[in-house]
Image (tube, rainbow, N blue to C red; front, side, top):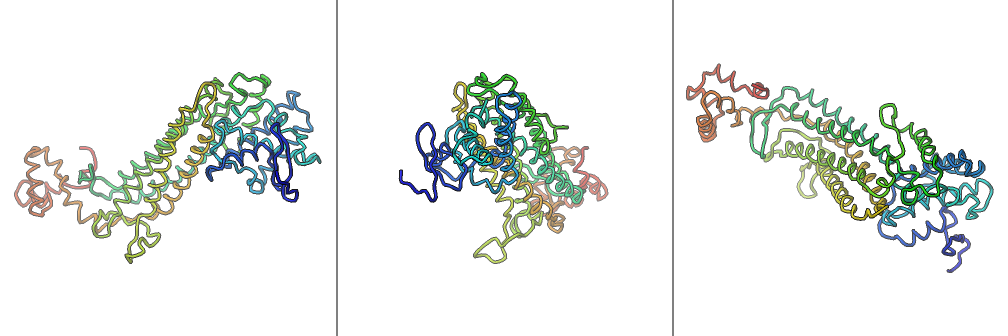
Length: 475
């Protein structure tokens, strides 16, 4: 080991000496992980790190209340955590480990332990690396990575999902405004991409709204299971090396600290898992959450893709909607403008579907008493929620809010929709109605024009029976 005492300090762990940058608070186990896992640029989401910090703070208080950690060290840990949380951007570059690491997330748990240990020790006027406040014996007291990491993921995911619900409602309100704006405007319905019976824009958009409302229902439906925390199970779920009252005390503090982010008056509070062996050895609940996010992603693809088609043109496409023009669409074709928000949505949501599959596939590494895929769980969930949150705001502000109907196009094609003949089948029969459609199309006549011209209906009867708006309602 070459010595660079100007920029590095030396710390020791049971495996020997490690050189660590002087300006960093992490310790030897973190540095070993940095050296070992140079795989990607993916890091743990800040919300997972913050959740880990809250767990450490809660544990320090609980251990002190149980007379397992003296007040001097407990307070130092609490103060160190508060310093980091209150100035997170300042300390964020101390948490840089790759997602692809040991499957329990031990490296990241120790990263947080070591940062708190060094900062707490310095706050007590001890040297960096002195371990006066020990990363394992004090900061990690009563804990294992095997219960801490899945607990942190659950806390972070819960918090982010609460925020995601607000973002979904943000888009829902925009769609509601369009439903009102587009009320009673009739367009051609489409099934199999072919013309079908008329529908109003408001009816079509109400379907989009309902998809998003159901997404909220699904998210709320998983909160009870997500709120079950495995903290206190330690290594294999038995609770070895921890006080029997430790988990309840820690969780009480977690609820206290998270109340500013999660409305516990309407959302279930965190509680100790009903079975530590399940919550540490499986990722079933996380896969359920990921599937909910995948369904939301698929809904956004459907919604924006429909709008993309309706806005296609301006000459050769459907041309029913004018989409907001956000940027030039071509480097070679002047005047071309593309549906960039639906396209970006499609790519981002396809990525989320891929993350869902990756997480499902990784379940094969949930063996015996531990799922060794927790870092991927953390990444898949937080990455997906972050992307969906951004997309929902983007779709609202840069797509839905600016949609306008192309009335000229709509009015020119609605009456020529062959499926407008459908109510006539009740009068003349299916076969005759089929013949009317073919002849009307052949002679470039609307259904109404054809039936009046051939004395099948009077003009008054045709106006009544073939009224496009009437055809959007039961009867």
